[in-house]
Amino acid sequence: MTMFERFTKEARRAIVIAQEEARTMRHDHIGTGHVLVGILAAEEPGPGMRALLGLGVDPAAVQRYVARLGAEPYDDLDADALATVGIDLDEVRRAAEDAFGPGALDRPRRWQAGHIPFDAMAKKSLELTLRETIRRGDREICDAHVLLGIVRAQPNDATSALRALGVDLTEVRAAVERELDAGQAA
Image 1 (cartoon, rainbow, N blue to C red):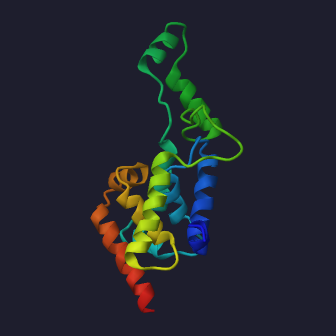
Image 2 (cartoon, rainbow, N blue to C red; image 1 turned 180 degrees about the vertical axis):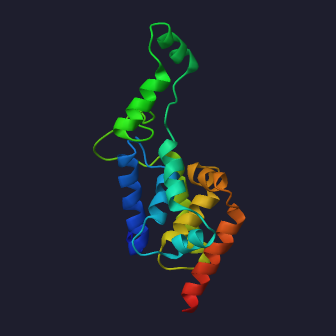
């Protein structure tokens, strides 16, 4: 049995959503931040999502944070060079965002339409997901185990997003463990 065969429906869905988010954000890889967005975007909340929501994590704020990853902000030297020929880069940015939405010029240039690979840290967190599942003696891997793997693999984009939102990672681990224990007791 492969690791992914042990994934519950919500854990599989989180990974699928992570790939969709990476593609939508025009990122060239699936990182831990995308997986975190996937956990928070599930139709049916799993214990990982419930733990995060219980800690007050705002899914939209996480998505905005992750969308900014990989964005290449323009350089002040570029703005100065364009100003010498009469182009106001801030005005161009405002016009582009009015026409195409916030952050339209911040999307990375590298992007692929087909398969999007996991980056090294996302792979590491998935390896640690399996270790967390074994440590707990659980048979299936749910979104909570994935979240435990992400927290254990810190620092990474997902843990940076959580910290930026004022979430203590020790509290995340404790909340996830409580959710998993409550699920076993039910």
